[in-house]
Amino acid sequence: TRTNSNYRIKSDTDSTTFVINVCTTLVHESDTLCPPNTAACKVNTQATDPADRYISIGELTSNILKTVNDRPVLTYDNGKVCNNGEKSKTIITLNCAPDLYETSPTFEFAEDCDYHFFWDTAAACPLNETSSGDCTVQSPITGNVFDLSSYKKDSGYSVQDSNGHSIMFNVCG
Image (cartoon, rainbow, N blue to C red; front, side, top):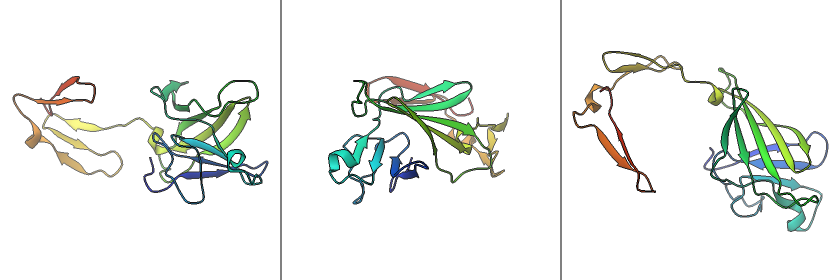
C-alpha cells in the first residue's frame, strides 16, 4: 500500500498507462483524475475528454484477496461498464520473489473486461518466523531477535473491531 503515490505501469502495446494502488483506493494526484473509489485506473493518454481519458478498471470490494494456485491474487471489481455490459475488473497475481522488495506490477494482458497484472514481490512470500519457547521471535529478513515477554498478560488482551466483534489474544501465553 502506498500512501503518497500510486504504481504507474505503461502498456507496451499502446498509449495506455495503468495507475494502481494496493489494498486501498488511488492517491489522488494532480495529473491523474481517476474516478472516486478507484483502486485501478486505465489512462488513455491520447484522449482529451476526462471521461474517456481516466477509466476505472476496479474498486475495492469486500473480498479482494484470494489464493489461486498457491499464489495470492488481488481482484478489484466494479469498474466501468464495458461494451459487453460487464463491469471491468483488475486481477493482480502476486508471485513470491524473496529478494525483491521495491518492485511494481507488470501489465500482462486484457481479456474482455478483465485487466491482468503480474507482480514479483517478497510480500507474496510466506513468513518463516523462527520462535523459541522463551517468548522471542527472530525476523527471517533481518535476523533481529525480539523479546516479547513483557507483553504477556495472565488475562490476555481483548480488542473490538468496527463491527463490534471481540477478539481475544495473548502474547507468549
